[in-house]
Length: 373
Ligand SMILES: Cc1ncc(COP(=O)(O)O)c(C=O)c1O
Image 1 (cartoon, protein in one colour):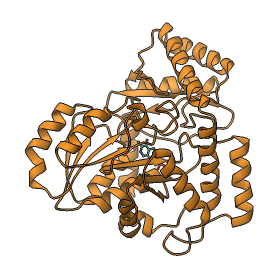
Image 2 (cartoon, protein in one colour):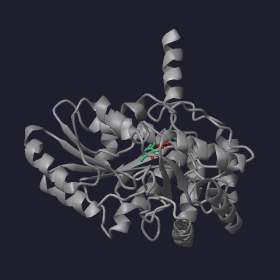
Image 3 (cartoon, protein in one colour):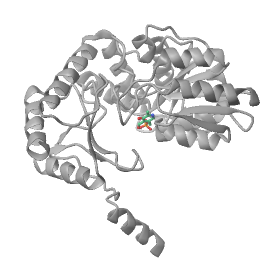
Image 4 (cartoon, helix red, strand yellow):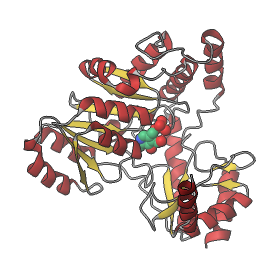
């Protein structure tokens, strides 16, 4: 146990020590509740209704007795929303990536993975025992070189990318990824955690953003935990894929399914997104407004049109200091540091949400200006 203490001390010395913070009493500027659906009265009402009807937990895994009509209805709606044949729910985005990647590829196979993919993809790749080849971030020329050299040596190939990269907010080039997937006979696996409810004019995700229909070799993974304001995740694709995952994905088979109330709440959130596409438009407008105001402060921000707007501070210590100073003003933006991002690329990951009022934005800007300009 002494070793653990030493390691923690090492993290503190490097400004890489992490602590959870109660978010009470502060305005949250770093959640992924982009469309403000987590507290939407209809979502909460529906979840409570089903909570009363079904009880708290689901009682078992999907393959035992934990698969209710609420799970099935949500899967059907998600498949319809994403324009795929079928959908399977998972306990979380982390579990979906672990389970789906691990089921799809093994020792004889190869994965081509963007270097900035989410940690759950990295862990899923490692666990799968497939050969993992990492391509430079959004560098599709590099990807093509790697495909040319290595694809032929393996049975199945998977190209994996986040649709919206969670720490930078940039967007994968679907056209290039799809061209390469087709040319090199690979499955294209897209993580839509931050794209669902955000990209495209109606929030359907990267396919809509690129005016592209779903094709059989595409796997669309997404989470219920961001713009859908709930918890859990899904993998959409062909009927065969879903059947396969239900039989092979260990994180689905050997883990208790989502509570029915959580599924019902997510389904209501999806219904609201479909009914009110103006929410997505408003999010885009607010995002642009916040970015333009940040620019006036001459802050070093990354911006790609998505609601993830990292304020770059580079030094871990500086990121911690500014995050703490904001907290004293009642504003919460978490300092993101290694290993979530590379060393010396520390940042405040500001996210835009429909939860913010005009006044909130003004308070945020004046506090940022005080501590950063
Ligand atoms: C791109 C990406 N994939 C997967 C996940 C994991 O999702 P979850 O939080 O539902 O486990 C996240 C975020 O947490 C993410 O940003």
